[in-house]
Image (cartoon, rainbow, N blue to C red; front, side, top):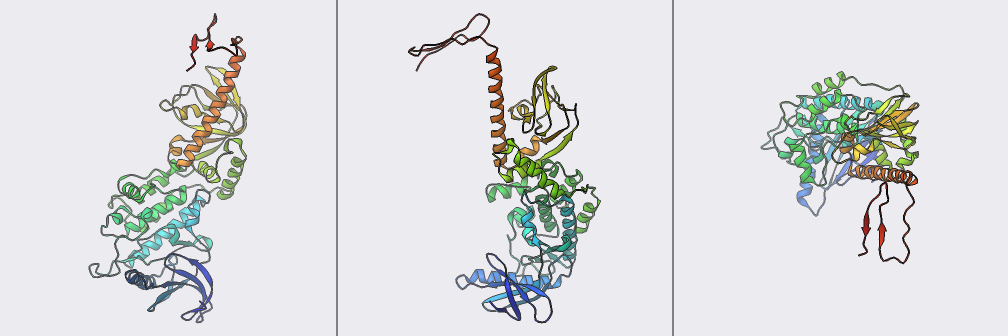
Length: 456
């Protein structure tokens, strides 16, 4: 297309299942605009009618909204075969690309973005508008981390009579971000958008959704009936204060959830969080590169290493510090990044471990007991990746399987080394003739087994 209405097409910005967005020049001003075009198909009249009403709704609703963190709409035109929406062109990205575990934004940026989205949704509700489809793909990020909420096509206009409003469509939205009341088809208010925004915030901080399932039916059940894990369980580096904020945002009980966006924003501004002098993204990348080179993580995929970083705490430990104490009960374990750790039992040295060696894995792997039967003490300044078993349990199945397999392989290797040491101190083995019909393992004075292995 060379032109769309009065707008001259410069290029295509993106294409979805129902619409194509073009970058265009506005002849009436010096600005560039994004023009979303929807073509109404001839093969499905019902779908065309639905798309036409959604598009008309977006144009009508968006033109009423005037907030710096909501995408501005300049013109909405509906023709017989197609419709287009001319709107503010945002040079930036949407939050979808920063929901991956290896692409997370620094914590202080996430809090700032969500704070502004809270205020934008608060402003929309004061105009009687509920978005109903808040998700990462619908939040654009412009310069200076200015969020711009887009796509009000599914918005619900509270000022209209819902019994007669043909643009009101039940069951809209993205299931993973839907509030329990939206899934149930209950009447909605602004709290449904705050719930969805809470889901987005949870995902931006942890790299995963608060509720996950292999199919939509199970996902819906969990959204309605189960509680989300604490964000600090998934990312121990986050401040404890975020747990209460997200717990309230994701409340299933409407009376306990945030009443409005301003209340949500107020709690975000009050939470105390540490802004590192070193940019957190740079530090995370540096830690990833260190782990990628460690022998322990050779078999791990890149995404799995990023996931490990999110559930672990990178510690710099001074010499003569006990990482694990004999007799304690916990399932914490970790991997030595650099330095040296001495393992002892009842005050006697068992071994010394260096970089890439796991520490404390036996208690983690044990199916029922968390009791420690050895102590681990640093002999020099040591970098130690401490992994909380509870946080790891909430990670992906792929990471859990990979971690267990690697730890078991290391444990078996150590047992074989112990066997060699024990065998070196034992007596000479009995020699069995090659032509014997049976193998014998006979006891000798002083120990051993009295066992006869009979051929099948």
